[in-house]
Image 1 (cartoon, rainbow, N blue to C red):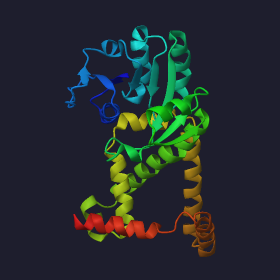
Image 2 (image 1 turned 30 degrees about the vertical axis):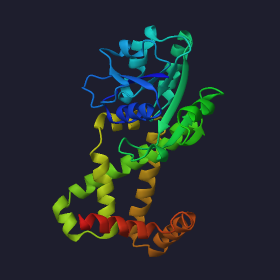
Image 3 (image 1 turned 135 degrees about the vertical axis):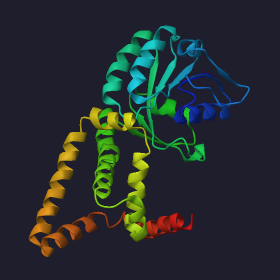
Image 4 (image 1 turned 90 degrees about the horizontal axis):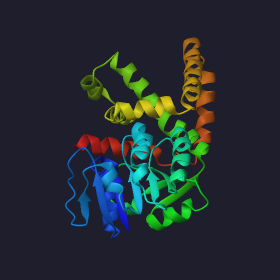
Amino acid sequence: MKVAVIGSSGGMGMFFAEYFLMQGHEVTGSDTRPSRISDPRFAGARSNRDAVKGAEAVLIATPIDTTVATVREIAPKLRRGVLVIEIASLKGKILRELKPMLAKRGAALLSLHPLFGPSLSSSANMKICVIGTSGKSMEIASRLFPDANLIQVGEREHDKAMGVILSLTHLLNIAYAATVAKHIKPEGFRKLESPTSAVQLSIAEGVLTQDPALYSYIQLENEFSAELAGELIENLTQLRSIIVKKDRKAFESIFSGLSAIYADDSKGALDSIYEAFEIKQSR
């Protein structure tokens, strides 16, 4: 199969270009940056439109906020029946525009959300959300990624889940990092850190190494972000009130109730924290 990867020099673009090459496909890539792929079945194109000429499948791996514009750019050159694969981490707004655009061109749409980063060591460990844009979405995804863990979800279900899994997690860690920075410098924190605090700060720092444009899009364009931020503030406000009142009974009641909710999932969690801490300390 002839596959075009738009954004082939970026992290996820390169990952999928190399994946398709390993699967025996021919890959044409397009990117403003030079490619580091040396496989003889890989060819670089002068433009996005040139890359998709004759392609049977086109994977869009550009920044999330340019996904629609990129598909609009290449649409006139897409052959009828081509499969367009988009991998954005937020779906609602993007799919509302892509569906009619691609239907008009006679192209099929496969909407995926890879739940991993480009540093994944093996394609056998891929976990991918498959958004049900057609009755054949899972069938098509299974053919393309036979060894992956594929999870089918609806558009709204996906974005609501990502509101919790991405938006809320990022927001919490940004707020945590901002609060810590007001009181202690990183080097001072690290001198006195405990295993739990060490892992927490590392998570926050990991979030802050990412692309701010991508993370702002995830926050601002997810319709559930503001609601979740409000719920987080309510919970923090409640806990602050309990601390001010020195109400140990109320604090322990909330703590115990949450411990019960997460009891089955939290088995081994503390061991994992200590393991991560020890690995960090040994570096």
